[in-house]
Length: 199
Length: 199
Image 1 (cartoon, chains in turn green, brown):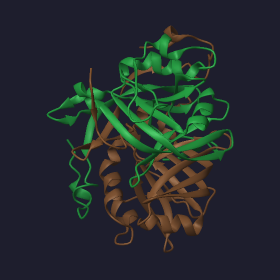
Image 2 (image 1 turned 90 degrees about the vertical axis):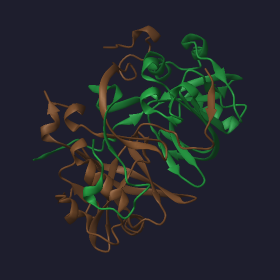
Image 3 (image 1 turned 60 degrees about the horizontal axis):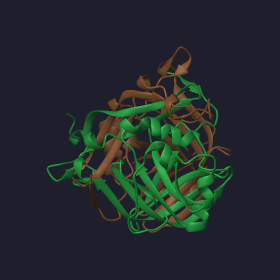
Image 4 (image 1 turned 135 degrees about the vertical axis):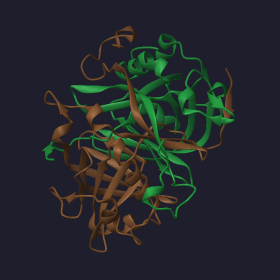
């Protein structure tokens, strides 16, 4: 086996494709990003990396609130569109037919059609070159009622998008595929290598 | 459609399952996490959230270096194991049979069997409650030569793991599934909603 040097590239894969909701110029706007992560358990926080030139960043800076909406596979066109077009030039809510609702925060619009919605209050904005890393405290989260099976949220019904990028020539959206294994991380921290349950 | 309130939960899905490489107490160690994200393009940076009690964090603090290794589906047992067991009590490299190599950095061990490897120098560590958000500058990255098709890295050959967690009762590893669509984000920023190419 040998390794090909790729240069200092962001080869982290797969990543979630999410719609970040903000209020800018008094109206709701959504920006697609895949540069997002969970950052702590207590308090529950997560981060999104937003390019400094983005229209949405102004709304985040002004209101100190944002939302994260996880779209399903059937929303791939709207998802890609919201990453390509600027809210300064178009009304993405109208064009995409998003039904917007609000939870605990008044400047963090949520998309009803997205099976997962998360509301965040900004804790900190870390400047990192061409992007700003926005760290938010999670205030509330929601799952669409139809995405439960036997009272438990069902990833098959949520059917989220994986965004994979390796080079400029190999980028795209994928579905979640085969179930590979449960994790022992939460329920049995003393177990050994052979105990992971594979299908 | 109605929404079920889940409380302030980290419902970001799917997430990458990665093996973070460090040197602690003079030897290479690997910790599995899924709380990772890309944080900027120029400079190329990424973040990992590491629980403060983790053995690996000490190595990151001391050496200001770490690696990110993306395992394939066939490494799911080793991947889960490295998230469950502490390097303070076991030699995960030996137990998992990892072949370790080094690139530009001398304290960021890389796993040969993982199809993607990334080397990072620590830029900043942001304390966030029970976790530390480690932001690293990407110094170099590698892809295994057998994971290319026609000169382009092939996500099917890399075959990474998606880690999905909705509740404590629904957590697990999945493969990448069906290809859904290309993105227009990079090559055609002026296009409209109808132009996303679906299969």
